[in-house]
Length: 121
Image: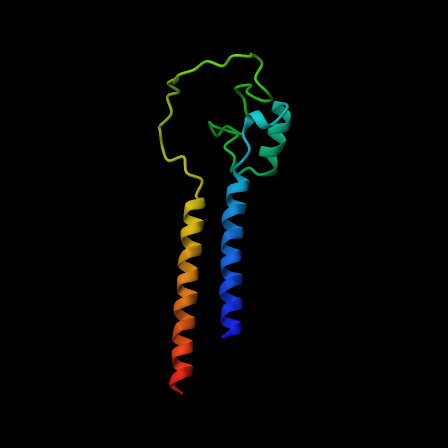
């Protein structure tokens, strides 16, 4: 029983760690870099572009010049039509969390079956 509880706790911690690592990976945007060259280096290190530094997929990071802190003290307010598709902007971490919960349920069910079989013997 102690082994089961340890395995259950370890699986739970592993799932939480995966979910938080997934969220931490998608924290960067063009404003987090001091120059376009720095953003380009980050894109070159990971061409899968998890931070969406290359919005149009041409291999050039932050080409609209929005790197570093804003150059004007007042930013415009209101929406701007960017012509985007308005698709899903989720990071995928929701699936990681749901998968982790599903894994914990399966581990719990397997442990319950094991305990029940041992008690019947």
